[in-house]
Length: 113
Image (cartoon, rainbow, N blue to C red; front, side, top):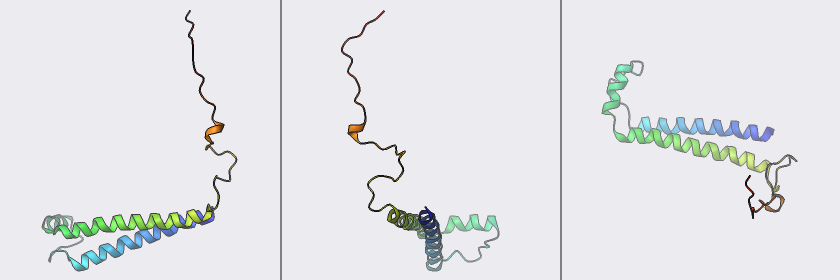
């Protein structure tokens, strides 16, 4: 369980760092318009109307890549803890084989009344 928690934390860190890196790369390749004040909401709103589509695509790509790589990192840690087992170690597993499930009874006649 500790390794799974470590995997989730590693996935979060990797995802956040990747989002920051790709967004920073996008801002260096397509800088914001000159004169934009990042502390003034009105200045940001005016700049958003004039920004090229490439800057928005960088943000979208950053979040897709960060999410995908972060999840795959977490899964890589978690899957290594369950490798080699076909069923969960818990005896209270909800998964059953098809032969363990009772087959429904077929109703051949119905009595009313």
